[in-house]
Length: 165
Image (tube, rainbow, N blue to C red):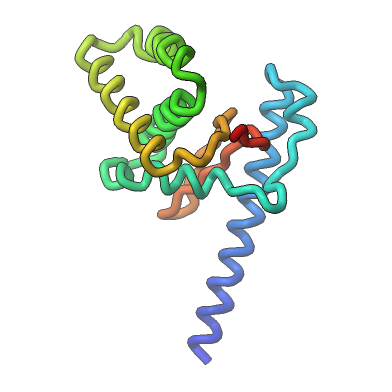
């Protein structure tokens, strides 16, 4: 009896997590539709059937770094780097330097040169990881949200739906 009770509890937690994730994705879509993506984001499907779940892909992408992340704030900051690196690995090589320079100008200008250098190294490492392990996925990360549920982090990702092969 105790085993069935535990299975039921796990099932209920999974259902609640799924409902919360869907709610987070809907909030993310609404946030994007109010921004520069407008109607395009408003009509964006949530978890389209048959499409890979970018939240799961991104969890796998950042998995080797999770041991060094201690809290939600650090995870959000690292996920921002991961999204920049992911997109830089997907866009044409000719645009990559411009994207990375813009990121440094916007986000790291107030940081000391050593921090800027270390951040660029992490991004380069992530780009290499993307190309080595996830080269078949050509979707761009448009936006994301990271929340915490107890000891677990939930990641919602909005990405381009159509992949360009």
